[in-house]
Length: 275
Image 1 (tube, helix red, strand yellow):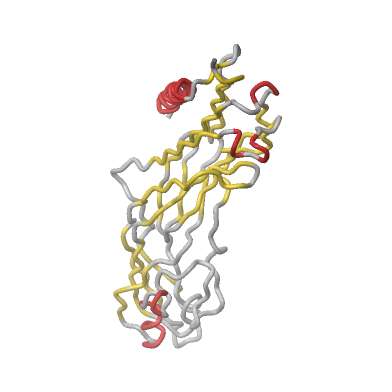
Image 2 (cartoon, rainbow, N blue to C red; image 1 turned 120 degrees about the vertical axis):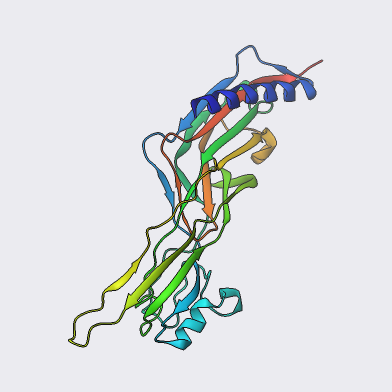
């Protein structure tokens, strides 16, 4: 990860210098300002935005519930439904909040100062690198999605997109940067009814959660901040909040491991147009 950061840093500096040359601007006497935030303390985690696909039912005790669960949400069913949706056959369970862009833990820089001489002409290149890993979740069907359903069902976690974006003082800048996360495959869940003696049922059992392998899904984003991005066409004396946010559009839990994400700010001071 350190090597990646160094390579990006070098590339960023070359890009900014080239940008200044192309626009015939004169760099100031002071050198480029570089600031970095790294996610080294904790794994960053982001919950799913949709439920998995429910398929391959066996020994179902509730045909209506089965038909509803295996039909896609877009067709009136519950498979791949938004995670904040409740099943019409369940107990009101909600898997999580409706999804939106949320801050990535530790990828934040506060109070980035810009000198008065550069507030109309400086160029600031923002780059971010985020390693992403997907993990499936084992959902119990009874009673969450079907109060009267017992049997065996396969839960499928298809591939999907995770997006990141740069936010400045709470406002999204530029376009979103997306990366496709591979499917974690399927897991089979079996639920049995209570015994005739009145004991509670055994609950859900299934194979362990899966995680994809054999790939290196690292997302890279860049954006050049200009004075024109701010009110009045002038950089503020200090940018209060520079942060990277992400959005999960998959049925999987998404994890960015500690030490495998960073945010780099490169400012090239420019004082005036070249003569």
